[in-house]
Picture 1 (cartoon, rainbow, N blue to C red):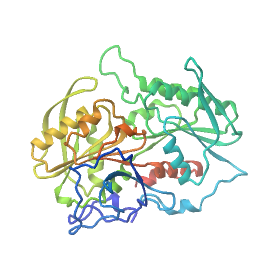
Picture 2 (cartoon, helix red, strand yellow; picture 1 turned 45 degrees about the vertical axis):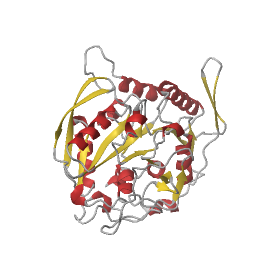
Picture 3 (tube, helix red, strand yellow; picture 1 turned 120 degrees about the vertical axis):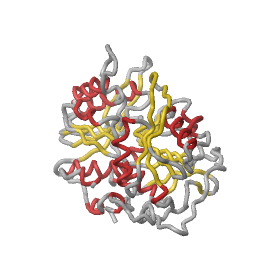
Picture 4 (cartoon, rainbow, N blue to C red; picture 1 turned 90 degrees about the vertical axis):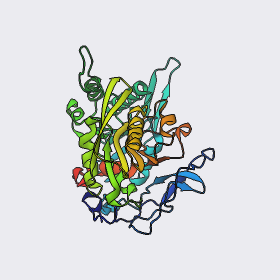
Length: 401
């Protein structure tokens, strides 16, 4: 049922649910089969049904994708009955170039077509945007994560917003699955900028009326915007996938890779059968440089699930995983929303420390960055449902209750 993910479960099994992963995309044939990925046994536990019990199909890693007819259990089914009022507040979706696949999946879930837009670059790198259809009086949603190249994608988003504003759109919502510069959200040393506030001002001044973002690095970033912000948590998507794993609840421990992520990990652990919590004490000596010092909590003989909002160079999470193995953890899973994957992340993540690395597609993962232990979950249904609720003026937070 819809609430089964969101409350503690009996110790006999991790989850009880039904499958919604009815579409599978196979990865390029060049991706090898992982000798470390094993098939779980389901004899002594209850699970949600996948077409395959792991992320391997015919010897190839797969990406579970939710289609528009089978909804995840944390989304109410009445969405299928909705239609766009073409005579009233019309809804239009436009995609930037940063993540067109996710935009297409969102449009497919919402039973809409992406709006026609021209985006190109002049010889000197300047960005040109022209809408190819009228948006006068429409509620417009612009889908564009500000991932790498961050500056180019951010500028593209601002120009798209400006084009819609000058074309007399009624309301403009910037749908930002990944909000770049979110880590620069405070001053930790003298003479530093707070770039997250600056970027929020730029998006607002460009003409956005609302922002929809996924798993911001810190909650205070919402306050940097002088316009409404809908903050979507992607944990339900990951939790729903973990329902397919036949892991006894007594064997689970949720691990925060640093002290700053304790609140996020605690929320995740509460929904994951109220699992115990462990914390990696990390001392950082510079940007993208981390040194693990100590572990708070017991992981001996446990299945450790590390939870973070993003994986960039994977230095923090890989050193944390090495510490967990040294402390006796049986298996280590890594779960995060944003797969930034800056070098040398792939080498670290595929080194054998992790049983599985579970991420979402808020940022597109390049073919060269796939490795056998990687599973990418789509957030298209979650974002599509959120857009519908914003358009219908209904509750968004109730999705996560």
